[in-house]
Length: 483
Ligand code: UTP
Image (cartoon, protein in one colour):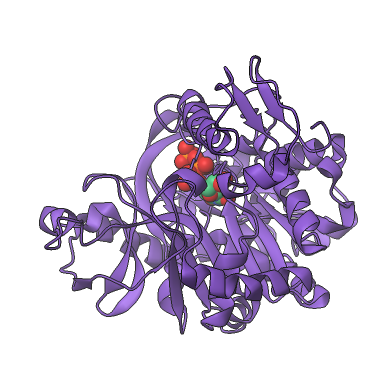
């Protein structure tokens, strides 16, 4: 073990003294865990060798036992159905309702504000990719999934090429910060290295690891992954707020003059990386947090809803809606609570810094899930933080409605509309429709792919291909440079 990591762990000498008793650092830790009712974590101590003991102590020193009360609270909250005082919240519209979704007047008015921020280098992109991708079941980071139908371009490359698109439009490449988890950090870094950051400057791409949280069994005890390790999992996309502060991201942003964060998730194929209208609205309205929503497809769609909860703007999970509220319609027959969050945000760097300075943590949420731990697979309570819990902490929140077809196409599952086939199918529909508008006289190609560096949405397509000759009799890949 390198000397510096021993120091970081605060261990200065052997953990096993000659008479096989515990030395001071481990003894103190053992007492602390015993006081918290968690002394079982030392149950195998006597059988462990020196290295395993160090490993265990190092891990236990990172565990915040202060979280235990929050964890218990989050478990209790699973049983409660609090009475909520909900009300609809105001929302701006990005576009009109018909394809190709021409920008609405309000969006046109604020877009130059976003463009200015982008051309001044005041926007950084945070791409969260630290999840485990359990539902997709892909062997590797989700960002390495080959999603585009002809080139098999991966999600990471798609986002990198969207940044190249931003560079072409605004003269600056927004810096990219990729949040990873301990489980996929090395694979993600290696993937970017292997592909030379997909054409981005290395200095403009950074990785930072989110935190982990332990799980609790039915008796409220930490689940063990082995005799010398607690079972832990990533602390949720909400872990981004703490990780940005602790891993130097906020400091780096301030150094670079970045004032606004464009936050997106690696699985949303159609999400723009730096949307000038959205950023412009965020800036012009003086918001601390902004979000994008789409119109809910039907009352039972499993999506968090943006609304006022006791007068405070936030996202209320679909599970917390009563049937009555979920089905409520206005006189025109439209859902009253229609604003489905797509987990796309803009943040002020100052706001994130304030949360860091005041050591504000987002709440923990519990979920009973399968955990593959010592003794086999069982159920335990896992804990996560959700990024949208930052909304109620902001002095001002602004919400923008975007067209679902244009901006929301997440790869979540192994099958179904949000599985690889379903995502490629929706992708085809969108871009074939876009091509039809740009080239009404040409027949539909059997299959289409559009390079994200060339063009981001249907509105841009005809300008991007101009008067070039396009052969639609074969699979059509519209790529930058190849037209
Ligand atoms: P999801 O909540 O859909 O989770 O994450 P997931 O990990 O991709 O997939 P499942 O639930 O295990 O099947 C939405 C986005 O948030 C990121 C994911 O990488 C994805 O981009 N995320 C999620 C994190 O960065 N960290 C987390 O701890 C959880």
